[in-house]
Structures are given as structure tokens and as C-alpha cells.
Amino acid sequence: MIEESILEEKMRELEEKTTLFSNITDKVIKENSADLDDMMEHIKHLVTQEDAISTDAAERAYAELTNLLYFMADRIEKLNVYSDVSKAHSKEAYNKHYITVSAEKDEKGKSIRTVNENVALSESSTQYESTMSSIYDHAYKALKLKVDMGLEMVSTLKNILRKRMNEDYLNFQVSSNRLNPED
Image (cartoon, rainbow, N blue to C red):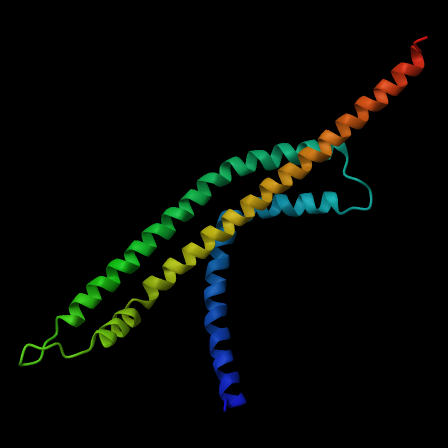
């Protein structure tokens, strides 16, 4: 039977660890996505007003967001490199530690620990390297998702502008036909 007090304590411990991890990951994400976040917040303000977004505002947002997304590609690649390097560093640290602990022998030349004990010691010893790898991996994925959503907004703005152009064209055709009726 599971005791509620023990489960609650485990949940508090997990919450503390998760909060630390999340705060560091959020910091890395925000350092790389602040301009995009600001731009998307600005567009959110434009499109959620009671009045429809003006054509000028839609054109400007489209141009600015498209330009910003171009520069976000470098940031995504940078985070991807950090993710790859931290992952490689984590594996290297783990392997070095595993070799060190597995090389320890008793007087008969037998390993003093089991394979599982060596794995556990190596994982414990390299938990910071592993955590850094995970932080950069999550930050990379989050930034990539934000850029993907930015591309969706570019598409939405493009559709708004296309619709406006079609409406303007149709209105021009109608007014043109009134001025020059064909018999």
C-alpha cells in the first residue's frame, strides 16, 4: 500500500528538482527567443483587438516577422550545437568514469563491483553533464517549436493579406464596371 505522506514528500522533491531544471532551461530559451517572443506578443495584440488588423499593420508584421525568423535560424543552430556538444561531453565523462570504476580490482584480480554498480556510480558521477545535455536539448526543441509557430503566423498573415488583395481587386472590378458599363 502506498502511503500518502511519502508520496507527497516525493512529489515535493520532484517539484524542487523540476523547478530548478525548468528555470535554467527557460533562461536559455529566453536568451535566444526574446525578440521572437516580443514580436509574437505584438502580433497577438494586433490580431486580438476588437477591430480587424489593418492592412498596413499586417504588412508590417509580416515583413518584420519574416525578417526575424531568418535570423532565428542561427540561434536554433547554435542551440543545436550546444545540445550536441553537451551530449558528447556527457557521454565522454560517463565513459571515463565507467572505465575508472570498472578497472578497480580486488587482490584476486576480479572486479570489486558488478556491472550495474559501475553503471550506477558512473551515472551518478556524471549527472551534471547529463543535466546540461538535457537542458540544451529541451531549449533547442522549444526554440525550434517557437520558430515553427512563427512560420505559421507568417502563413496566417500572408493569407490575411491575400484575402485583402482579392477583396480590393473585386471592389475595384465592381466599381470599374459601374463607371464603364458594357452593353
